[in-house]
Length: 145
Image (cartoon, rainbow, N blue to C red; front, side):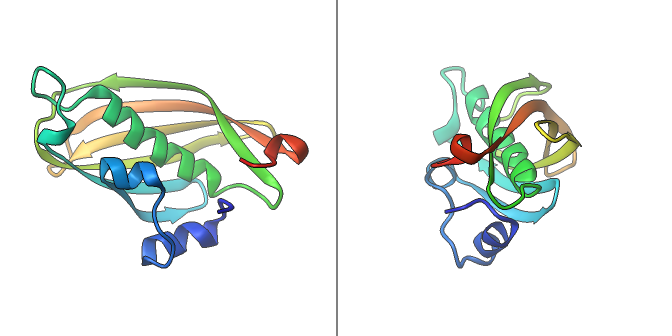
């Protein structure tokens, strides 16, 4: 599936299936517009690390999805993208609770973009903040991505 705003909106409406990673982990896209995406996620025991808290890699996946969709919603015809770098700060532990990840494009250049994501709990408390650098791909680079 080509990542276009229309396809992402169709995913929210249930007309297009979510990507396999979203199904595996359990996060879902709930809102999208150019440069912004919102995902909801319910953390539970199946997402725990050996210490019983939410595994950090799961938070990275959710943040990466929110940032990637926010950036993808800015792409033109014939463009795709790849993530060059991802950073995350874990600010408080999570066990079992509803989380929301909001990805926002900070700067979308012709080739490189900066995207951020805040992950909050149901009370609106910040549990993690992430940032990502994305590179726009065109032509042969974009083929198959």
